[in-house]
Image 1 (cartoon, rainbow, N blue to C red):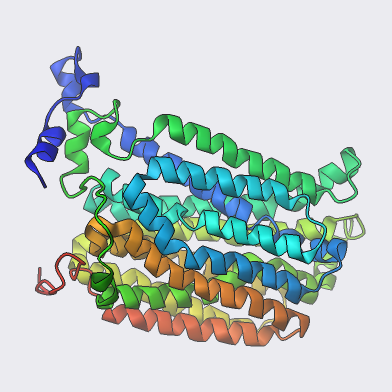
Image 2: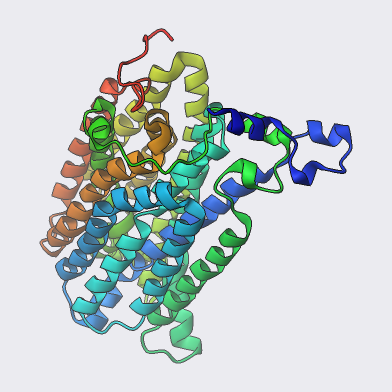
Length: 468
């Protein structure tokens, strides 16, 4: 780190002037608010992304399209999301997350509002492409600035909290979309109430973007609320952003980048069922059992959509718990076992346990037992996310946004492929094949973590000693 940057980290800020010496010894808490803001972004991102999932059957009916055609919308979203990860991450590295992330959120929020005006498959798919393209830069940008705003031993927990924000957004999407649509229908007379729900969700993102632009700064030293003590807590391992171009050869020749890309691809193959197709599966396979569980509401208009969304929301709760506990555990494992095995253990557990649960899905016929299995899958998949993100940051050096974008690109190609293919299998009622594909993918993901070495960074291609 240059001398000027060291001085910035060591010197009292303008906001420190006039304070008592004892106040300067206590770190301020801006870094926690930055993490909270990031959780809010993640919440809005997932709320808008999965708002369509609980009302898939209703939308297909209203637009007169098949589930496979709707699946093409999922494919279009995740393909655009995947292919633009690298350029969107590079733009955040180049121009700063404050500028680019605010732009991304505004753009996808407007696209969410526009989804409420679609009347055919073409406009649906085109707007899903816009949403995917604009959401592509969100996590690469957040991953880049979280490295600058957190210390190495707090990094996995911070990342898991941001991931938990996304799961909260998914929870709200599953829990409220059909209900809000029902309120528009029953109280305001909208024949297709889901259109009003999408408008409300899009406006929430616009509000977040205004708050983010006002409060956030790309570097801790630039924030008036950070005192010297907080900068010291964050530590010199969190360098400021640089505008140097991405070292393409270094990325493509780094074994860790490819292993993590494979891990992300396989994780999303197993994860996309929970977030995009679980409500449809419940309605297709357990409709009678759901009626038996709630006999008084079985005939209410729109109630099946609400119920399927509520049950899916329970899996989002499990994912939140898994993400937070996994981040805490990942930081503990790193302190206990060192940088290599400390990062590997959460990934090994996440893939192995969730794969076993998918195998078990073949053998259950009771909706309550099936939901228990999905809870365990959601929990264990997210248990490994904190370690995955922290490993991106470990190896990325000055190019965290671009590295995270490259690996996340491959991860979302898995979501794109299966977001469509699972829809085709749904039309064929071939759900067992969905479970088989998911189990194989997660078993392989677990094994891939045995090859990850976080000490081999882009700047230092030669691995550090394993004992360090």
